[in-house]
Length: 214
Image 1 (cartoon, helix red, strand yellow):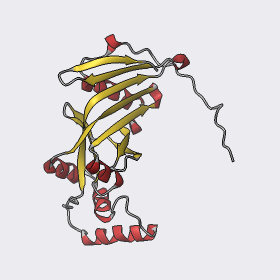
Image 2: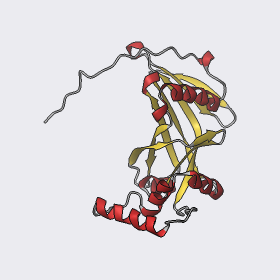
Image 3: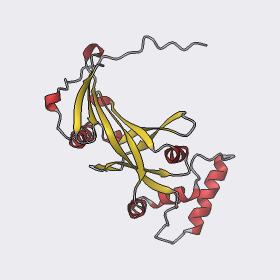
């Protein structure tokens, strides 16, 4: 049965985006936009789509959470045994995409990915709620499991094992990843689908700013 959504559409009424409005540094510009998104839509401002490909060349995408960023890149955490972890080991390049509906904005960031240092992964894991730490210990992310009941029993077993223990060890496969950008595109929705798209591209020495057709 055909599901027809051709009549579904929305109008965009976003403000204009001019090159003169952009900071010369895309990290600074991203910081401005993320601050505005956090004020307008705080619950999901740091949610981002992470797109990866493995050795087979097939793309996959999923939502993850940005944990911090700086001039070195954009950091998130996951299990290296997950599908995305395996993809990044086979092909350490990815794109992340932020979409802020309330502001009619997107930011697309692509580049090389590396794992962060062990001390930083340890520090962030230690800052997580204990229930999240225990879930990370109990679950083997992306692996097939026969039932929900088995998963819940695995978590219960880990809870029993670490009952009364304040320091939960970080699983060796649970780690941080950093995307080092080589291009960052800022997209602002505009009326009549004539969206503003401005891309920063690293030419090896500096950031070049280019306008793209919508």
